[in-house]
Length: 423
Image (cartoon, rainbow, N blue to C red):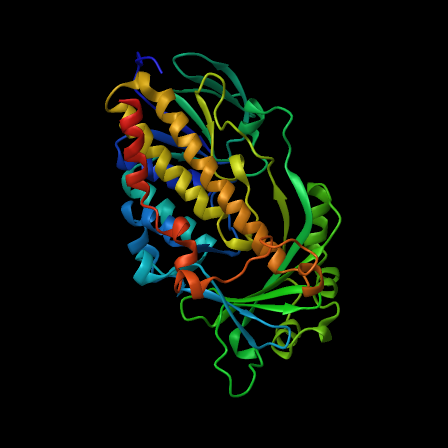
């Protein structure tokens, strides 16, 4: 990147979790930015997300974690249950306070977004709503000129696409890449914990993933006191276009029937959850992925994609939003290094960031595939080669230690290494 002839400014397309967190991370380094969001304000986003230590360390550094830690459900692991509803002895750790400094946090997506927006307002970070990104007009050594659907033209030193799996910004870098449907549809609802029939005389730990003939069923507390439970499973389902998915989401009676299909094959605690499914409260999530992208930057290095725009990760291992937060935090760190020293080193440090992020995402995708396979019926799991199904290694790695590579890495220390390469 040549020395700029004008003040640095970053434009962020997408006002979801990735875009909002990037704006706060940039502001923490005194880098000006502006966010453009397609949807109007206010708009509600449903569901909850799981935040693990790798993301929470970044959110803590930005002052976000202290504001949200008591606004969700804190836990350490998901207990894996057998088809009889008994504890298998296996656990999948999402956090571990003693090892990694944080328990995992399950928090409503809307609560998190509102907190991020509040912090943006406090810091004077601008966000403009109902701005539909259209195209990149021109990319030069000085920056990017881009256009919105309403005809408005803007210029930025860098343009960052944090606009999700169906990213319009990504289309500029990869015109022929489209998301790939996995063939799996998640169906979820929220129910009161009080309606669940827990096995008598058993300390039944939640959250839990419960095996069944059709795969796995998840019960996960998702509010502060754990009184509301996410109940969900996944089904093989044909692909639809956006209009079709909207129609299916609105057909609550059909979804309820699909959700409750073969209900008696599940353990009684799952049956009690399914008995309390209510129309109007059922959500779907078709699992899409993005083919592996070797570059998250344009040829001119002035257009960058991150988060789901660069690497949509299925939610099985809970790392989609966490990897997005890793993206935004480390990207802001690298920009701070470059802009405060020598801007001509941008491409060198960007290449280091790209290698680091690809290696991390590849390992996360491998774990996600293992967890996806863990949710298959046991008969299907047994057909797979060794290593393709998640196995708890607590006996050899210690409690919670199996995912130390994921949760224990210090992001600031990693970025510090890149400074040595480019300076």
